[in-house]
Structure formats: structure tokens, C-alpha cells
Image 1 (spheres, helix red, strand yellow):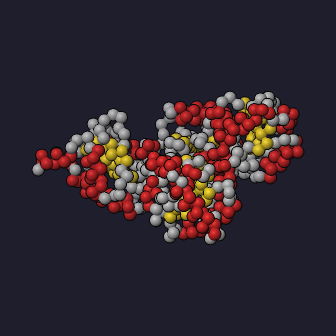
Image 2 (tube, rainbow, N blue to C red):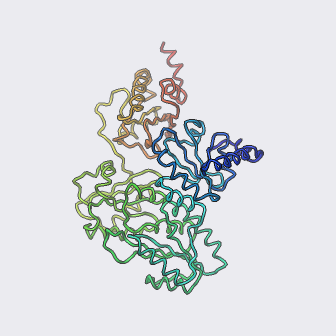
Image 3 (tube, rainbow, N blue to C red):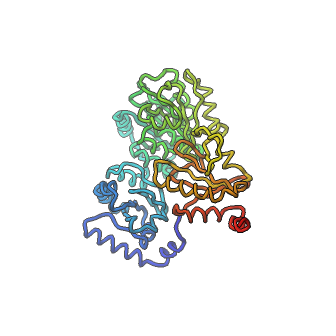
Length: 517
């Protein structure tokens, strides 16, 4: 958590602030509110003295913030004495908002034992926030004691259109606490994201474990520290038999990978809601764009199913709805007239990278697809980047960079490069462009050492470390090898940008200017 060391000293050496907060909580309770108001003065004392604090960062003028007031209050009331619900008015607490990098409203963050656990990206309904917070403070694994309880698990699974069930088994009762601790550590973040509180179960009853395995027709039963995964296909895919997998505990990393790969039904749909869940699983996704899952090419289905089984825990294989993901398709140059079998893409969340499988007129074969997926994981397949055609000649000011010319221009080890990434439809981007164009003309006499450039980031992709997440985005790349970009993080003014360029230039701009004069 990025905060100053002296806040920690205040928490340790003084209880005054916390007493103040406690009295403020009491005052809010008297006002029939279960949500406390935090400021720069009391934020860290509260966060570091409470086990769980769920914070809403808002602006009074924000309509989305105002719509969720009642839901946030209801969730706070439901979890009273289990978690602290708090809020920060970012129009009043700008310094605190900047420290925590709040860029939009509302932003919701969960803190556990004084540390930022994660941002909340789910629905803003009380039941969803309650599930998220409760899942963060309790283990998602529930103990199954007998056969009747095991039957209830299957009934719950069948009640869903599609779903997954994970049953863990520990051979020795005395190992149960340690095993549960390990399971909770690797599964809790995922369970919270996918609302998986009715998905994870554990038993120490050997007879019951064997009965469960026999029920699901598991042939090779593991008799010690293992997890059984049962996943039903989505209803759009006409498959009555679930996908069954079993994994013996080898190490925490391997088991975590298995759990992350077993919480989604095979060939689940990717959409605006589930994308956050897949991201929480921390696995790359292989997306096959299809127009109709029930009429999918049988060969394509077989290949995707085989890939899903063989790459379990390494890649989640998903179906991308052709129509609802139209924008994503077009970003990846999958046009509207492409056939189902020609559009397969792999996305790595943590690196924000896309990889496009070579398109063919027929469904891919399983072995070439798996080799390609493994190549992506190994880093031997080049990432896909959008790119316009480079202008010819490219003599304008600033110099124009497109996706395919980034390395040749920005990556030139002999020159400093300042580059602006922009989106024309944003006024702030247009203002930044005007400033950078002016600066480029002023610095044209230094073009043998310094390139001032711009890139339309709506139609072109920079390499992953410099991919624009907001507009405008600016970086300075000093000459040398390897070239590492320095982000511009000040308010966008001519004075700040020029000062930034002079600060990071590998040669003294001011002295050169004086010599020329």
C-alpha cells in the first residue's frame, strides 16, 4: 500500500485519531447511518485499526454515486460488526484521492488489515457487495460431513443453468485445518470475484470421498489431499455430461492453478459481466468468437473442448458472443463477414496483450492450436498490435507513430523520444495535441537528437508496458539501450510538458538554445 511512513507512526504512537474516529462512528450511528465518513486525517488510522474496511470514493455531483447510497447503506447494516463501511468525498479530500489514484466515481476499494486487498468491480447492489465483503473475510470452503449433505451439493449444482463444484479431501482429520488454510489462501480472491460461496467444499470422511468420486464416475481416485472438480457446460451447449477433473495436492502454486481453471463451466461465455470474473482468475483466456453456440461447427467444439481439458489451469477457453463483443472483434480486426471458425484470440490480462491465431477457412486442428497456445505462454509468439498504415513521407511535426513503427521510431537507441498518445474525440487530447505540436516546432532544430512524436491510440497499440489506459498519455524515452519510458504525470500545460522534456533529455536543451542564439 503506497502511503507515507509517518502515518504508520501515528497509528502506533497515538490513539487520539482513532478515538476521534470511534466517536465519529458513534455519531453516525446516532444518525441511523452505518457508513462512516473518512477524511485525510482519519483515513489511515481507521484502515489500519480495523480488520476489514470497504471504502466508497465518491463525488456529490455523481449520479452513479447517488444511486447507490441506499444499497451501500443496506450492505453496511447487514455486515455491522463484521466490516467497516466508509466513504470519502473526493471533492473535499483531493490529496487523499490523488494518493490512492482515484480516477473515476464511484470507486470502491477493500482494505484488509491495513492493506489494499482489491478494487470492487461488481454490481452496485447490496447483495453483491455483501457477498464480496463477506467472501473476503471468511473461507469459502465448507465442510461436508455426511452423504445427505453431499446430495445437497449435487442438487444445488443441478439448479443452476451451468456451474462448477469443487470438493477437496484431506485424509487425516488433524491435517484439515492446515489444508483448509492453504485452500482458502489460493481460492478466496477467486471465490469473491465469482460469488463462489456455494462452490467450495471439503470432507475428511474417506468413505464419503470415495462415494462422491464413484457418483461422478471417477476411475483413478486419489486417496490423500486432492480436489475433485465438476463443471457443467452452459445450457447453450447441448452436453448432458459434466467435465470431471481430479488433482492431487502437489504444491500451493499448482493447486491454485487447478482451482482457477476449475471455477468456470467449460466454454463459458465472455461478456461485459464475466470479463471481470475471468480477470480475477488470473489466467489467460482463449476466445473463440461464435455466432451461435448451439450450431457451432462440431469440429471446432471438439478442438476447443480438448484444448480446455489439456490446458486446464493454464488457460480458460471461452466463447465470445459474435454480436455483443462486436467492438472487441473490430479492435482485433475480426470483421463482420468473417466465419465462426476463423476468429480465435488469446488475451493475457496481467500484461494486457492480445494474440491472434492464424485464420483459416476451416476449423483448426487440436495439436496446432495447443502448440500455438503453448507458444503464447512461453513468449515465442508475437503479440498482436493494431496499426494504421504509416504515413509516407513522415516529415510532419510531431512525427507520426503507428503500431508497426513504434519500435523503429520510439525504439531508436540513438535518439531521445517524447511521444503523446491521444484520442481525437476527447477535448483534453486535442488540447494536448495543440501543445505538443507547438513544442515540436520549437524543438525542430534538435531533431538529430530528439524526436517529438504522437500516436493515435484509438487505432494503434503501443507495446504492453506503454499501452494507453487513458488519454492523453505521454512518455519520454531517453536515448540508450534498453529504452525505458518515463511517464508524464503532471497537469497538461505547455510549461509542464516543456519542463518534463528538459528534465529528462540526455543533452542540455537550454545550453544548446543559448549557443544557437
